Image (cartoon, rainbow, N blue to C red):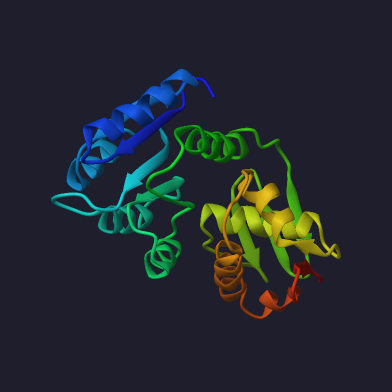
Length: 224
């Protein structure tokens, strides 16, 4: 992951230093911002930022505002940090297109693992990977999805989830399997993360969303 640039946004200097130290140790280039407005200024000045780690509670402009503005022009992966653990905050993050959602306090090693997982998938995609099934065309290289010839906008995690479903069509997938394969980290919590993403993905796929079948008490299965 050499030379990949990560923007770390947090109004607490100690938190920024902690995250920066761990990321730098893994070979990332880290840029810092101490508030929401500075984060946007830095983001627009650097067109090669690979990922953003964004705190929610900040002066001038909070994380939600920053995320909303960035998402209006970019699909750059965003990991949201928050001191809150309320469900409504997590759901809002997913609504805005957040790719990962981590509550403070957290393990810096786990954070770096999530960063690596996201960047590994976005930067090691081989050419010519186009999957077509039931009117859905997914292009891994262009990171695009078309449904019946019409392109739809998916967040990074929604795209990865759909890719995983298509690659495993007809296979019953437990929530644990999905978490380990798509999120690529040990997950200690309930299944709300997956269920929220599946709901959003179904909605964006329209009638094709019915291809994602719920297996009650277990998980999901993709059937064309």
